[in-house]
Image (cartoon, rainbow, N blue to C red; front, side, top):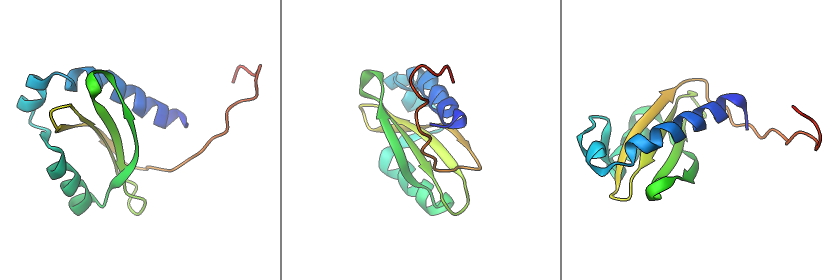
Length: 106
């Protein structure tokens, strides 16, 4: 993982706790049913899901991005199917950095 991606995941993990509260997710203006959010990301920004992970309270973090424009969005979907936008930006790149050699404090 790149440092920027790790930072994005760290941000997403920190914000995951905020989005996990069902009441907060329903009153936050950047939340909607998952199907509507995914459709909007695809139609307006050309973004598709690039990665995902599970967090506490059965919340799912997803990273959507456009290989063409470089835009990216991190979402969190709670168990009730509400998806919230957590972070977004530009200059997305797909990377696969190797792990450092054992014993290397990289």
